[in-house]
Length: 124
Image 1 (cartoon, rainbow, N blue to C red):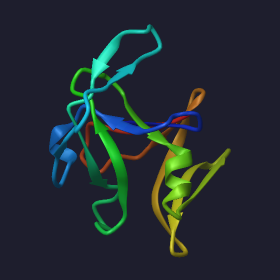
Image 2 (spheres, rainbow, N blue to C red):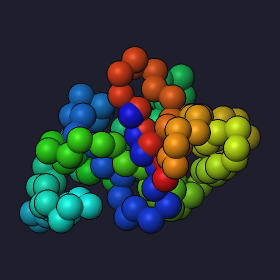
Image 3 (cartoon, helix red, strand yellow):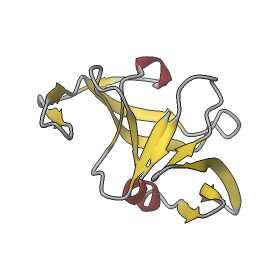
């Protein structure tokens, strides 16, 4: 499950298996969560955004093994040339004129639909 956050500075996940290739962090770093807990960054690389369109990737995703939620940065998606639409109907990530990923409204977050049956991305 991925949370999409308009204020996030990076995409991040604890799911090592989602990465096509991992690259060790050149400089040690940590991510601080809402409760100010530090979580070490293990790796950084890209992951496919969709099982269908493997060429569409989230770039510079942080692999943070100890976090419990996955986070996607709207700003980073837009920087990559894709569009993000948040409406009462759901969340839509589009590129080259087609929907790459979509999700539904879940409380105060958007939850991107998952193809692996267990994890999801959240959009805030």
